[in-house]
Image (cartoon, rainbow, N blue to C red):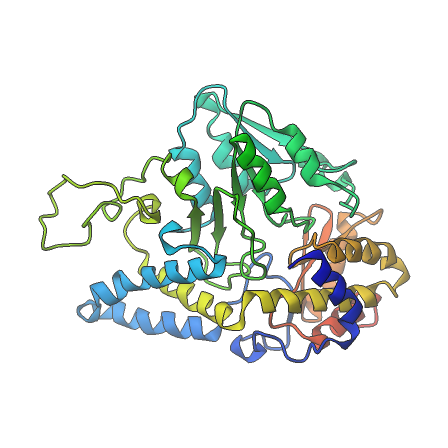
Length: 421
């Protein structure tokens, strides 16, 4: 989406038909919950659970397993669906067990030299910190950059100011790039404050400076389409907005970056690796040059099936349509929130960010002067009313997805106004 379409949604939000979500609620087992918590753990569709249960039955009878169609076929389907989700080429996809696994493949495989530097925005989730910090014994530096005035993290995270529409976070990041910077590693959508970074602006500047931009995409994947034209890598786990089980995910890499990385060294990462007509002990094989050369081991068949099935559910609905629906939900919610005196300032701050296309699926309400304890108490009251939200580092997070509708918005507003029964 672009700022113009978001501004249009802001104006049209009251007339947008929220009763027809792109993901049918009946496709999930949400019961009576307002589940606004996929930023922590997404619900898998019933179809995914049924596919996994069916395959588990075959694991009881391994003579029924189909090596080509299932052991190799399910991972192939997952790569194809991941490529379609990113509007990318399938040969650039590597199946991974998590976001961290994808980032580790880059961190461990890159040709670092002593004195090189990884630049990251302050306040990244640990999955986008520790793979890089582990390179310290090789003389590689991990350096953080503050994104706005009053921005804090770490032990001071709870005293941080919230991002505002006038905060030019991209300019601060680009100004911090030095001659030592080899990788800019960042979250597309930030986990605590919900800010969505401009991948096109950052990626183009990185490409011009010979820096690889590596993206942790887990908080936006499945709800928005990333602009990866100038990126070098995009890693995501599947258990949040992709609505697949824990333990699966994928990594997209540009051919340019992948050619510089050491292969993972697995038996299916070489030519003819799955051809048992050729002696398995014939080690005179070349490494594959596509994304399979970075995969961590033999095929995680069941996880690939779950990922492929959930991705197909999302693709059938359309990621762009899901993004538009989320924008309308957010607009309607923030309009109602602005009518609550205690939340008005936060509603206006977030609406400005939304209209400028600076938000992903997460609306992160800042604690202001109330403190973390007050947010946790509010969250717990919501859980008792069937409303599932989360608190991270001084923000109450409400994450919309493609199954939410107008009734969900009304229940959320009633909860925050204190009128929920």
